[in-house]
Image (cartoon, rainbow, N blue to C red; front, side, top):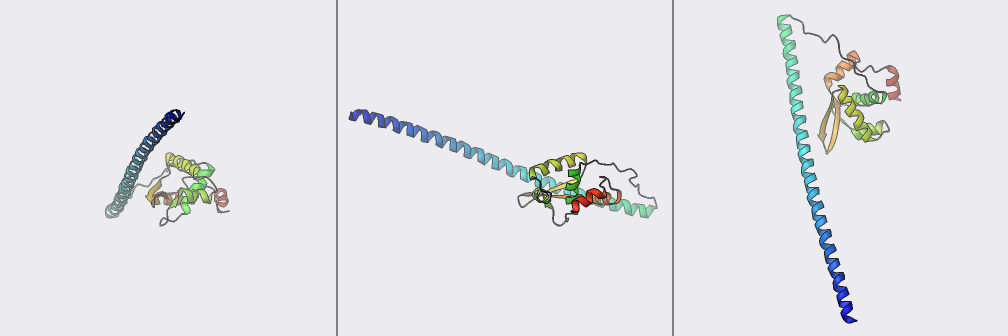
Length: 180
């Protein structure tokens, strides 16, 4: 009887050891995957920041070119070509409200997806979808990564065009609903 218990215990010990080894192997694989995901996230963040920096530099170059065009126009007396026909962009009512949140946000204090979601009593995941749709429709929303969050703002030039020409066809009713 004593040899039966020793044999049985050694089998249990073998199973326990096999289980511990298997769990340890799984944990090591998960740790490797986590490290890989973190590396990829850091690389994506670095790429995003690089693209944002390039975009910022490109915007400054465009501003300088516009200043040069204006200077050349004054020097030569030839008027600048004005955009006579601006494209109209059709947005859904929810997209218009999101635009108004972005429009009224300060340029010095960009707004996050969570801020927009909170102000419209909506889920931030849904807001991300609307922002993506707006970008695809041609609304120039700038994204900046700071403090581990995406911060959103509108292109200043587009903001001015919207104020002058109402490219997005936002009516007073939508503005009044937004303000309430």
